[in-house]
Length: 161
Image (cartoon, rainbow, N blue to C red; front, top):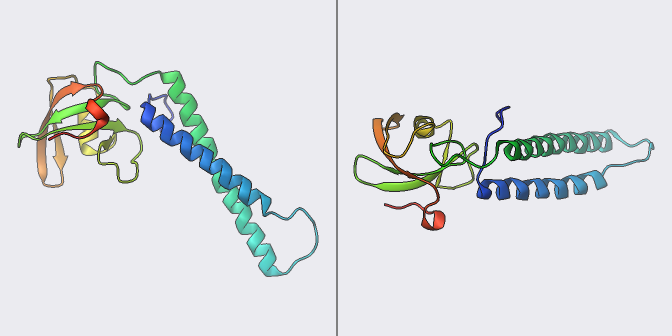
């Protein structure tokens, strides 16, 4: 995750908060399986215990990462409304006339067709632009362009064409 403060949308915040709550629940369950006694067990018990400790470390790292990301988002404030940035909702028109609304996100969400990551070709091209600007980017089929139609929430937050 980037080290700078970057705004996130309310939907992204809720998704991160849900993931954080799930991680805390999972961590509690894994921690409850750790043995606190110092009795001697066989090698299989030791290996299993080590695996649970490693799982706790992985969970703790992700919990820390999400907590930091949410705290930095609070510091950054809301997404910009006058130019495309991380957290912005942007409607674009493609050369074939298709109009679609996307959210510029920091992380790809599972099967979310309305999210464009800031590090994708289209996402990078859109960052810092205003409504009315034409952007160029390299798509899998070759170079392409898109016109920024508007910034802000689309009705229902869905793609349009």
